[in-house]
Image 1 (cartoon, rainbow, N blue to C red):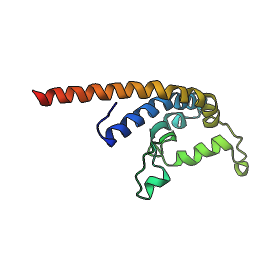
Image 2 (image 1 turned 60 degrees about the horizontal axis):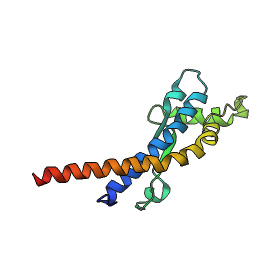
Image 3 (image 1 turned 30 degrees about the horizontal axis):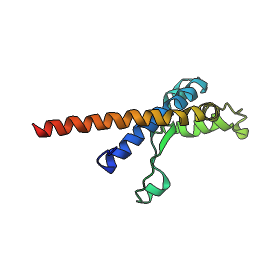
Image 4 (image 1 turned 90 degrees about the horizontal axis):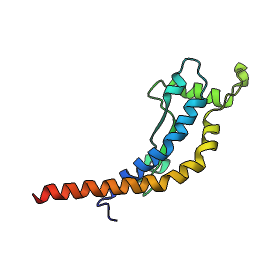
Length: 137
């Protein structure tokens, strides 16, 4: 199947990976400490910016990020790390939530990618067909 452009192919892949990764985030939200709920609300799935792209390189890679959205509150990034790993200096016990979520869902996420990718490819082809039909009129 031809998706048309490289951008379309990248977007199809990113949407499929995002859908496949969402259950990891849901599990992390479920396991996250519930002090005020800020940590739970800040766990997001989104577009990752890998190191090879930060330097201006554009590859054929697609990356998705599951973790703390710093735009909610930048301090949550530090708080999240302390909750996950603990902080002996502050006598804070570790309350892991992200790693257990990853460990329990990673295999299932890999299994979800192919069907999600197929659904996204099918949808992209349907959109392209509708667009071609509109142009033909």
